[in-house]
Length: 90
Ligand SMILES: [Zn+2]
Ligand SMILES: [Zn+2]
Image 1 (tube, rainbow, N blue to C red):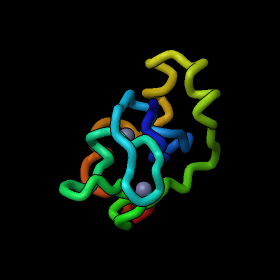
Image 2: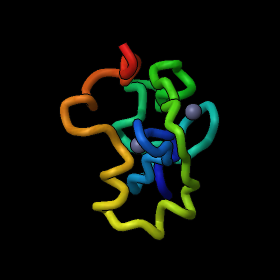
Image 3: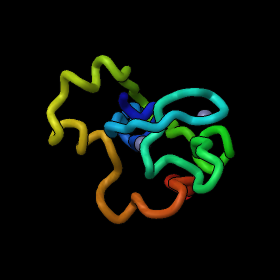
Image 4: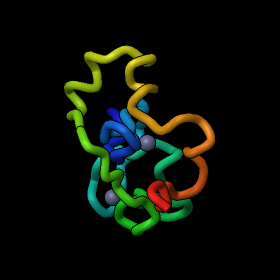
């Protein structure tokens, strides 16, 4: 399974990390990084994740056709990726 949480500041895309867990609430595959701790809920269900308002987006299927380097370019440059990504336009 691939994590469903949408990330990416330039291109919105599913996290797509391989995972064996599912969110208890929405049932979507959720990687360790996008689980909200204890209960097994994903950060989307707990409200801890703000979906990116990127100008473009790709589906999980499309994701799998990109290389790692291309996928890396979907995200904001290193340094802007800490925290909850709420204040990109401040
Ligand atoms: Zn969920
Ligand atoms: Zn994830």
